[in-house]
Image (cartoon, rainbow, N blue to C red; front, side, top):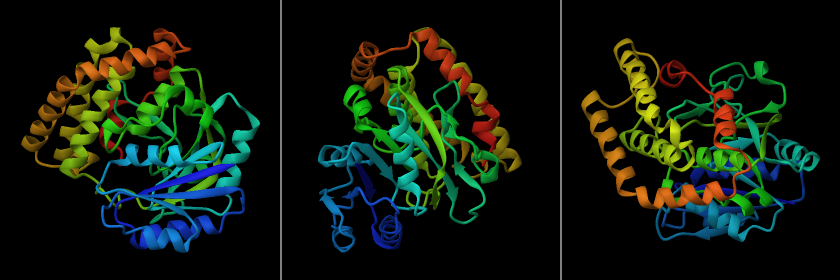
Length: 330
């Protein structure tokens, strides 16, 4: 019924613990595919010992491309993505699959992702978005007990999510051009624009070692996040809102600057301001270079849309974050 797809770059202890958590699932009707992006075969033996299938890549193809390989090879009706540094509770798959069976109009299901280091606190309870395309975990660092109700969210974090195959067949899988970060934002928005719902399932609990692989605020992460939120805007946002997006971004940058000065949020952890300026310039240059391809993708998304641009914008507004929340919350 379910295929769990785990991309990995390092293998090792995290992957071993992740596979052990899957072996303890109360759900029996699932398969596991490990996609090894290391280029060194680091996951081959661990996958074999766990009874999982593995796909070996000669180099790091990125998160989206790796998951798409798993989707192509999957036999399941439902496709779960799981980070190799995420460790599911024994009832995780049963809870997600049970929710998916109840309502075929819902295409995506978000787990309650807790922080491994502080397991009573959240990493995410689904995802939300700021109106310049920046996405962030809903409820991050809040007490998990405060998010114990099942409810609609904008889209799930692909750290631990379930996607209905019918939805992926309609809107397509992850966009491999994102390489790292925000692929779940793009896919989630494409699914919502096509009329699919997203449900947060609080009983589907996963414990996550946040940014264990890519680092919390590296220069590479800053580049991919900045570039990919612009990819998201070009592909998915209504055309008439584009002139306002730079204004939303400038407002967010002010909060990042304030955070850097006061030791709050991402600004306190990130690169010096002049490096960030170079990163922002490079990200915008990449978007301009890729603009024809992004616009072609935009036209394809519009063809499968069930929501008008205005209704889609209302949906984004309903699940919107403030600039302060994006920049200053942990």
